[in-house]
Amino acid sequence: MGSANDRAVLQTIFNPSTPFGDVPGLDEDEDVEQEEEESAFAPELLEQVKDLELQGVSAAESGDLSAALERFNVAIRLLPERASAYNNRAQALRLKGDVAGALRDLDAAIRLGRGRGRAVCQSLVQRGLIHQLQDRQDDARRDFQQAARLGSAFARRQLVLLNPYSALCNQMLGEMMAKLRNPDVTGSD
Image (cartoon, rainbow, N blue to C red; front, top):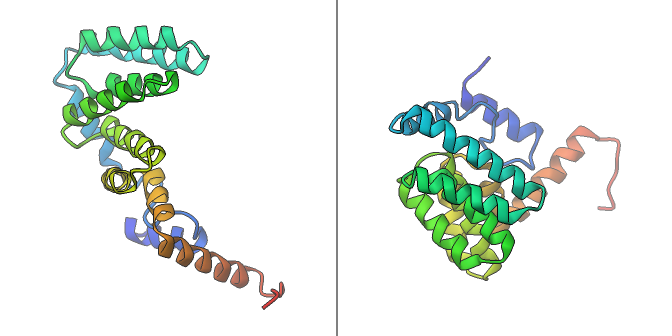
């Protein structure tokens, strides 16, 4: 089948608009890492908190931000040392317009996750997006770089968008690949 690097190279050749190395299944260690992190919590309490978070996400998706925040608050009270609920509550706070509260929760999630795991990755992406909206591009770039190192394809795409040279190179590579795929199509060159 080939190595992960071989699959990444093929992915880049056949889908030049995707970031290099963005291959499904490449980060298989992520689930093992998350299980290790969550093994520190009592299983019954962890299940209860996960259920509350799912209820909160569902409420937020249906537009009931008050119910979502209520569920996330309870989840945080039950397991205040777990990063995921802070990340989820930050999203609801941001949607409600409380950007300062969202940033506090994202900072807490990143600190609690000690720079690892899915919740930290998602928190870095959210914080990077807020920094972008606040025209703090250097802060956004730092967060996206960290999130990209944790496996976020979205963060890698944001880094490309923040780098005009990389975006131009990606565009030129895409045009070249399109010409190779369809040699009969002549451009206006």
